[in-house]
Each structure stands twice: as C-alpha cells, then as structure tokens.
Length: 139
Ligand SMILES: [Zn+2]
Image (tube, rainbow, N blue to C red; front, side, top):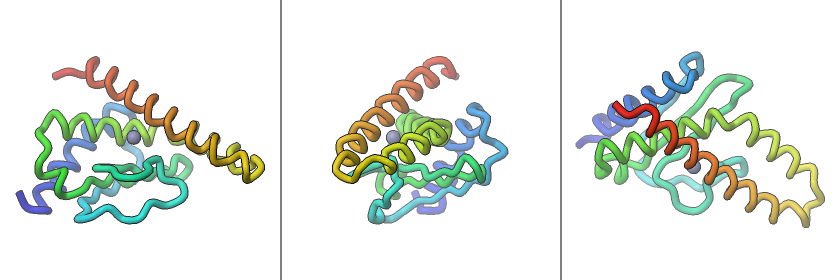
C-alpha cells in the first residue's frame, strides 16, 4: 500500500464518522505521517500514538493524522475504531478546551496533577463513546 492509498483509506474511515457525528460543516484535513512529530501543548495525546486529531470547535476545523506504518498494517475494523475515536475527540473538544482553560488558570504547582487527570479522563470518555457508537452503528 502506498502512502497515497493509505491516506485515501484513512480519509474514508474518518469521513464516515465525521458524517455520523454531525461534523460535515467542519473544514477537514487528513494526513498520513511518516513519523510522530513532537507533541505540543494542547495535544490530547502524550507519548506514543498511532493517530491523533487536532480540532478547533470555534472555527470548525479538524485535522486527523495517522502514522503511515500503522495505517498500512491495521485491518479495516481497527482503522474504523481508530477513526471513530479520533473524530469523537473533535466532538469532545469544547469541554476539553474549557477544562484546559480552567487548569491554565490554576497555580503552576497545581496544574500538572490536573493535567494528568484531564488527559486520562478524556481518553477514557472518548474510548467509551467510541465503543458505544461502533456498537450502535454496526453495518
Ligand atoms: Zn484518544
């Protein structure tokens, strides 16, 4: 599978969930990355990842990226699961943005504990919603 074919497959998997989750009015960018770029401050991921979604609810855009090695090796069901998960992150962005703003307003020494809690809670909630959606949207 070429990088171009992997991108086409990733885009199709994500677009399915963009449509089902009511985000079709967002500007969407899909990427296949050869390697993981360094994380940035507002990332929902920490450490290693196979896919990620950056989004901005106010300006209605999302950018979903997957690593090439993952995108060419994962089967269709696995790619669907990952795409659903990343698009759910876009749905949860407003509450996550507020949470980040509240944490940023805390004293510096209190921020780190809440940031770890936020990241874990976000992943747990995103994964839970992803599982329910995929169960409800079988076929
Ligand atoms: Zn996640």
